[in-house]
Every structure is written in C-alpha cells, then in structure tokens.
Length: 136
Image 1 (cartoon, helix red, strand yellow):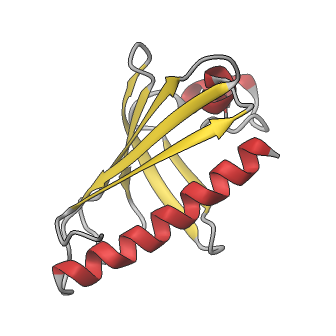
Image 2 (cartoon, helix red, strand yellow):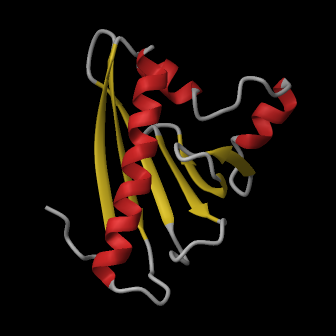
Image 3 (cartoon, helix red, strand yellow):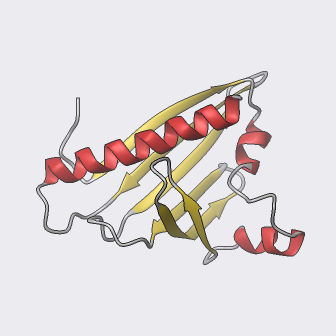
C-alpha cells in the first residue's frame, strides 16, 4: 500500500553479500585512493547513473561509521526539493546483509500521492538494480 506522505522506505536483504562488500559499493573503486577518501567526507559530491539511465547528482551530508549509515541530499532537478535519502546497512549473519533506504522530501507542484508514487518507482528500481548488482 502506498501512503501519500513525504516519506519513503524500502528494505533490501542481500544474500551472499557481506556488510563490508555492501558498504564498499557506495564508494567508486575506480577512483584513485585520494579521490575515494574525498568521496567519504561530508560535502562530497557524486554523480551516478540510476536504473532508468538518468544521471543523478547528490551530496554526502553525514556519514556514521558506527551505525553504517550514509545520508545524501539530492541535487538533481526533480519534483522533490529538499530530498534527503538515508541508507543504513546492517549485518544479518554469515554472507547476508540488509540495507534500509529511506527518503524524506518536499513536493513541488504535484499532488502528494503522485509525488510518492514517482519516488517509489524510482527508488524501488534503483534498489532492485543494486540488489541484482550485488548478488551477481
């Protein structure tokens, strides 16, 4: 059931994936060591390709190593100003990890239910793409 609130949450469980491997995927390993470290500092900007092929830009707002949590603000022009996504990763035992991905957002010029539906579709597709990538 889709709720028409400015909040979205999705839980993804990964099989045959360790917490360490899951956490590493959020830092582009193609970068040089100095650049990888820079991506981990709050304020760091990154651009990536979403499941539908569009380019998404965001900024790392907070990083909590102990809680295995990252918070990013969306910078790409969307109908969701002030969108803040939170990814919290958790170890579920041998070769299993979980990521809870949530987002809070405002909507710009579209009804609440339509905004929630658009965000649900985009973030669900990206969650599925991440799961398929990690489990291959």
